[in-house]
Amino acid sequence: MRLFLCLFFLLLPASLWAACTGTDLRTALAAPDRARIEARTAAVPFAEGNHWIARRGTRTLHVIGTLHINDPRMEAITARLAPLVRQADLLLMEASPADKTAFEAELGRTPSLMLITDGPSLIDRLPADEWEALAAKVRSHGMAPWMAAKMRPWFLAMAMSFPPCLRQDKDIKRGLDVRLSKLAEDAGVALQSLEDPMSVIRMMDADPLEEQVRQLRAFTAMMGGGQDSFITTVEAYFDQQALSALFLSEWDFLQSGALTRAERETLWAEAMDGLLDQRNRNWIPVIEAARGDRIVVAAGALHLPGRAGLLNLLRQEGYRLERAPF
Image (cartoon, rainbow, N blue to C red; front, side):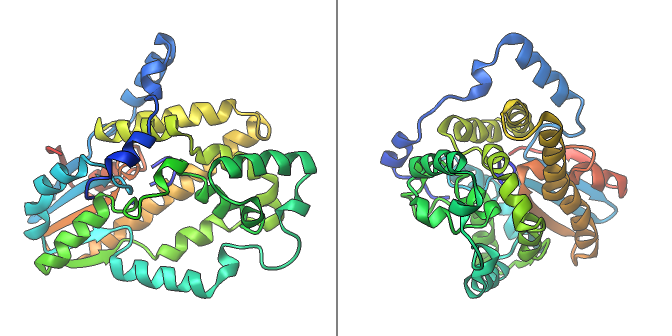
């Protein structure tokens, strides 16, 4: 969720979860900081909840906020939501299984989308001290610096967005969206993507490589990847308060030393607009054009809240919103 977290299971092995220990940073906040985040959250439309029902005329939408990674608690949640999916006319998700497969094949055919295939690697594009600092962080994530040096900055930031303790599990991406899509496929329910998965890559890679390199420290700071950040994101999701973790991430990022304060604020605002707000707006016509009166919309939990969140945008389209059990 943390931007991609922001942003898509069977139980994880006990040994893996033992490795992923950490502190929910929300519990360690000083009282004034906690009050500040709580006040900010309270001012946001639809700030809490991972399951909402939107009704208009004969149409009913079940809007479900997902977590794109595995967690033992997903088993019970999936079972609770299963009847809704099985009875639906359509499951709309960020990327359907078929579109995910096509997307991964395209990435495999076009390595330049992820890698620096022409010109110097990051070793030669960064000052020596910055490269050494980055290489140390890369090693701490269990990656070889020579591999990281060939990655495009946006892709390197994504690769470092999960803590190393998760990398040993082959099912880590089997999040709620994957579980719901399996239910739909088994029940013969139609699946459709809310967007072309490649559109997100185009947005992330839109800046020239030189600008991406200049912002690389900010990218990696924004994407996080520490175990405490991971635990905070996951616990906030299961508390149905994903926004609180995002606000805490924003506060941490704006206090970081990457770029100037004004540049960090601009970068964060642009990321939020591109990764959340604009995508939400693009999804509304897709939802409106979808066939059927019983539709499940499953998207990352951070897509639900806010003035430009899916729920508020649906309200502007005339839907009545009601929070439902998750």
